[in-house]
Length: 232
Length: 252
Ligand code: HEM
Image (cartoon, rainbow over all chains, first blue to last red; front, side, top):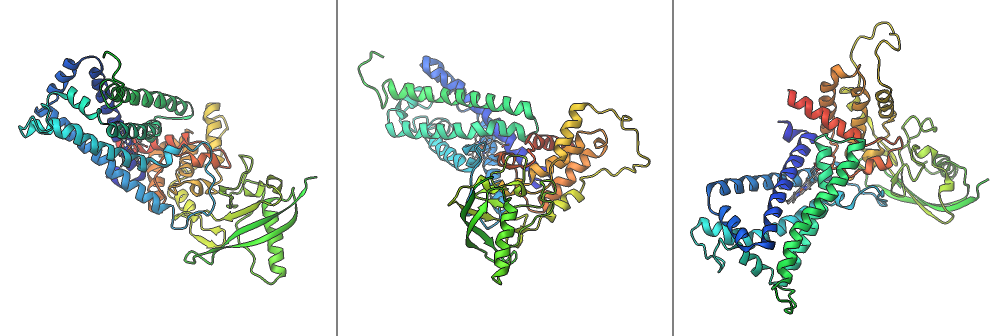
C-alpha cells in the first residue's frame, strides 16, 4: 500500500490527517467563542455534543485521526533520523530561509500531545465521559455545564500558563504545517507557495487567537488574573 | 589583487565507510585571495606529499561549476558560502578572513557512504536515474526543432530543472538526508515537456521507489535544500513530483 511503503505516500497521510485536524480545530474554536457572550448558548452546545452516538462516533474518528498523525510522526522522524546517517556534522550553519518550526515539528507535536492529555483530563473526562458512564457530576459540576468548567479551570493560574504554552506550540506547528501540507499533496508551486505561506500564517494566527481570547476572558473576568475591581 | 590570508584548516580524514574518522589540522600561510578553494586544497596536498604524508582525498573534475563532482561541506554549508549558482570549485579564498578557522567535511548522509576522507559514494543518484530518468522511445531521425511546439515558459522551466548537476548538496543539507530536490528536478525536466509525458507516471513511481529503497529520507519541507542548491533548483519541483506521484498512484 503506497500510503505506508512510499515516502510521498507516508507524507500524504501526515498532510491529510493534519489538514483534517486543522478543520476540527476551526470548528472547536468557533464553538468556544460562543462562551464569550452567552453562557446558555455555550451550555446548549455542550449538551448537544454530549452523550449521543453521533458525538461518540465523531470522537472516535477524531481519536483515530490523532493516532494516525502521531504514529506517522514518529515513524517518519525515525526514518529521517536514520537516513541522516550516524555521523553528524561538526559545524552547521542553518540557512536563513529554513524556519525553526519546520525543523522541530516532532518536539512541537509532543508539546501539543501533552497539552491534549491535560485538556482531555480537564474537559473531556469530566464532561463527555462522565455522561457516558452516567455519572454527570464526576468533576463536581454538572457535565452539561461546560461554561462553569471553563471558569473553574481558568481560575487556576497554572492552567492558564499551561494552556498558553500549549497554544503557542500549536501556532508554531501550524505556521509550518499549513503550507507544508499543501506542498505535500502537490498543490503548490512558485506562486502558490508564497500564497499558502501567507494564508497559513494568517489562518493559524486567527485560529490560535480564537482559542486564546477565551482563555484570556476566563482568566481575567473572575478567573486567576482577575483584579476584582471591574463590575463584570 | 586580493590580499593574502592565513588561516587554520580542519579537514576530515576517514579510511573508508566503516572507519570512525577524525579531523586533521594545518595552519595555511599566505594563500592569495584569488586562489580557488580546490587550488588551496592542492597547495595543502603538495605540502603533505612533500612531507611524505598521505594526501587529502576529495572529489573534483571540471573545476568550472558544471560537472557536479565537487562536494565539500565547508563551515557548515554545502559548497561553502559561494555566490548561489556556484559549486565548491568556484568558491574563492577572498570569501574568508585572515585568521579564520575553516572546517571541511564530507557530505554526511546514509545514502552517501564515505569512500575516503571527503570523497563520498554518490552512485545512488545514478541508480535513481537508471530507474526511470530518461525517455525510452526510439528516436529515429532527428526531427525539425519546431515539429513539436513547446511554450517558451515550459521550455525555460524544464531547462532550469535540467540544470541540476546531481552534486548532492540537497541531501547533504537536509536534516532528513532526503533526495527529493534532486529526484523532483530530474522528474520535472521531463514532466514539463510533451516528449516526457507518455512515461511520466511510470517514471515518477520508479524513481521515487528507487530513492526510498536506497535509504534516503522523507521530505519535511524545511527548504534547506533549495537554500544551498548551487543551481538554484526550487522546491516547486518537489510539489510537482508529489503531484505526479500521487496522480500516478491514484490511477493504478
Ligand atoms: C491538533 C493537532 C495537530 C495539527 C492540527 C497538526 C497539523 C499538522 C500539519 C498540517 C502538518 C503538515 C503535514 C505535512 O507536512 O505534509 C503536520 C506535520 C507534522 N506533525 Fe502535526 N498536527 C497536530 C498534532 C501533532 C502531534 C500530536 C504530533 C506528534 C507527536 C505531530 C507531529 C507532526 C510532525 C512530526 C509533523 C512533520 C511530519 C513531516 O513533515 O514529515 N503533530 N502536523
